[in-house]
Image (cartoon, rainbow, N blue to C red):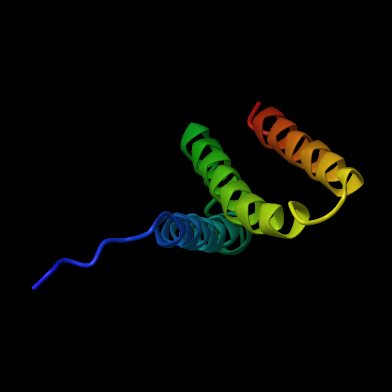
Length: 99
């Protein structure tokens, strides 16, 4: 029996799905840490939380950026420029938000 090979499109879809699920899990965890724990008297903050926020932001960017590129690549030049500007602004705000 021949082994089925994954196509590049399937591998990309799996990667996008992985990024989306990582972003979802980290967002849920961080919302809990930042909003629920202070209500019961625990305030957790520090380098670990900041690092998790950065990982969440990067995973969210990758999950959204690939899907948005599928939409933009068939449109005009203005759409592609707006896409690039939005990605650069997102990356800058994610990195600067860490400090």
